[in-house]
Image 1 (cartoon, rainbow, N blue to C red):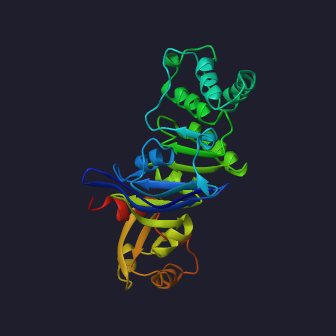
Image 2 (image 1 turned 90 degrees about the horizontal axis):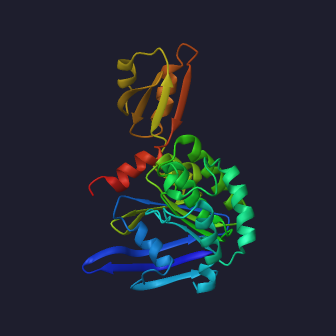
Length: 297
């Protein structure tokens, strides 16, 4: 288990991380999100001991993070670190040996990962010959070839199409099921929502929201109602508590002041005894991010 207790880091007069508390348990995925400059990468660098916190404590299973612990960490940086003139195999074996793997074991595992992630290319290809998406897959393999106990993934899906994003998501889920503790950051809120068990939102170095994803969403109330109905928009707007209505797909999204307004909306659209669709839900994570983190930066 990773635990950060009251971590603070300043660069001159700027407070990059301000009193951060965060826990990531084995078999759990923590989504760390925030606008650019919110303190995410600084947090990763402090966990990895690339830079020192000014105050607070970072521990793994209740003890400081030693070099031996670092051997069991997999880190995928936002700034990719592949050596372009090396072959895929040379690259992966190099990183595997840094983490204490035997070359023979790493070579066998690499062949399996190339197939599993559907990498287009051969292990003898140079990294510079790969497409951006396939190079990203190789970076991902380099991060987890040694089967780490703890993973830090900084924007892991950059450069990937939806199909390949799903491939990597599936592998991240498998790593979680095998007991790895995982932190990842992404600006793709739908991906964060799909992957994360818990979430920490940073704004200017401070935590603005923290908890399980569904609990955070529910705390904002079920104030959005999607309907597919023949009832006129003017009639729905006349219902007390309706703020606005927007066209969405085959239906309309109704935004209300309080989730109790949903009963009135349901009564209105079901007066004829039938409505094609009625779904009352809390805001999406993307909408919460825009409201809580991105606004007024």
